[in-house]
Image 1 (tube, rainbow, N blue to C red):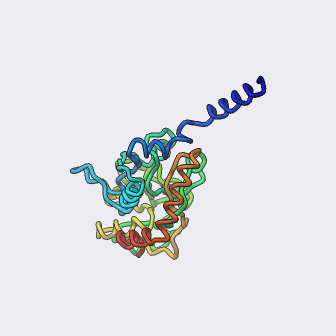
Image 2: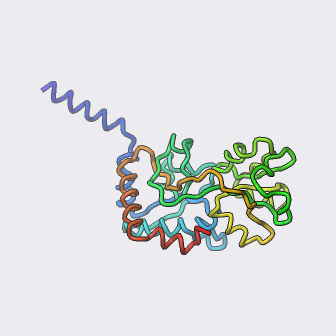
Length: 258
C-alpha cells in the first residue's frame, strides 16, 4: 500500500513539474475556439496592418487564417513588435507567431515549427547612390551609416556584415528603411522578400547589386518551446499543406520570389 501511495505521489509531482501550457495549448485553442497569433504588421508582404480598419493582410495572415480554418476555430491577430515577438510566445500572450527567421538566440527560449520557405539578406540604398554602392564592401566604411530595426535578425547582421561602418538602430513602429528615405542613413538591410516590395513602393530606392545575398535563412513559426504536442500538430499541418501545394500557391500570390 505504501508503494502504491509513493508511486501516485511521484506521478503527481512529475505532472506538477510540467508547465501548464506544455500540455494545454492545442486544447486551449480548441476549447476556446480561438487561435491567437502574434504579428508585427510591418513586414511587406508577410504581414501588413491597415491602421484605418485595424485589419491585417499578407502571406502570414493567409497562412494563419488557413490554419484556424482547419482547426475549426477563429483567428485573432495580436499586435506585437520585433523586440517582444519571442516574449509573447514564452509568456503565453499568443499561441504562436507568423513567419520568423530561425536563429539560435530565439531557439534558446522558444520552439520552432518546420520551415516552409527561406530568405536571404540584401542591402538597399537610394537610387542616387547607384555608383557609390555596388557591393557589400562599399558599405563597410567608417563614413557609411547602415540602419536596422531593433529586435530583427538584421539588427545583429548589420554589426556582423559592416564592422567598420556606423549603425543606426531604430525601434518599432519606426522602420529602418525610413531612415534611408529621410537621409539619416545611407543604407539598410532587409530580407530579399521585403526588398523588392520596398523598391516597387518607393521608386527612389534600389537594391544594391551585390554579388550574392548574405545569410540564407529558413523561416518558420515560433511556438511554445515545451509544447511538443502543439509543435507536432503544426508540423503535420505544414507537411500536409506543402504536399497539397498550398505554400507554393501562396508564394505566387504574394510574389515571394523575383
